Length: 256
Image (cartoon, one colour):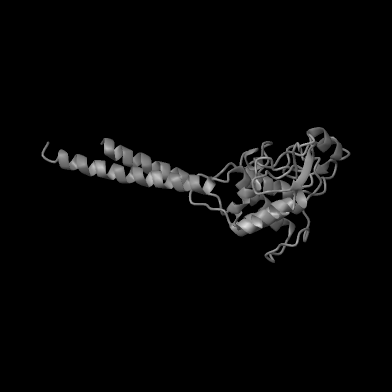
C-alpha cells in the first residue's frame, strides 16, 4: 500500500505540473489575455531567435531608460551568440573603470565580464530625465507581478485612448492593463520601430512578444536547466518507486 501511495503521489505531481495554468489577472484584478509562450509548462524552452530579437528591442528601445543590472555581457552567450559576437556586443558599450594611477575614473570599451551599463549614473539622474518617475530595472521584471509574462505583454500592447468620461492626469498615459489604467511610461513600441537582423516583421505585437521572452530569460536564465533537473528527478523517483514496489511483492509473495 505504501509503494502504491508513492506512485499515486508522483503521478499527481506530474499531472499538476502539466495541467496547472498561471493566474491570468494583473495585480488590480484586470483579466489578461493569455499568450502561448515557448518557455511555459514543464517541458518549455526558450526560443533563441525570440531571445535575440528581444535583446535587440531592449538595446534599441528600452535601454535608454531601463537598466539590466544583473546581466553581464557573457550571459548573452545563452541567447545563442557566439564568443566573437558577445565580445563585439560588449565592445559597443562604454564602461566606467578605475581608478587609474592618477586616481581618476575612466571609460573603456566593455568586456564580456562586465555587466550591461545602466543608462543613468544614479536614481536621481534617472528621475530628472523622466519627469520624476524612476524607470525600474528590468532584470527581474517578469517576476514582479503574478503571471508576469502575460502581464508584461499586455502592458506593452495595452495603450489606447481613454474611455469617454475618464480624465488622464498630465504626463500620464492610458493603458488597459495597468492597475489604475494610468502609467507614466509612454507607448514604447511601434510597428517597424526596429529592423530585425533576422528579417522578422517588426510589428509592435512581435516586439512585445520578443522583449517579454527576453525578460523572462533575464529573470530566470537557468530555467531550462531547472526544468530538466526536475523532470529527471521525477523519473528517478518513479523508477525507484517501481523497483521498491516489485521488491515488496517479491519479498512478501509467500505471506498471506
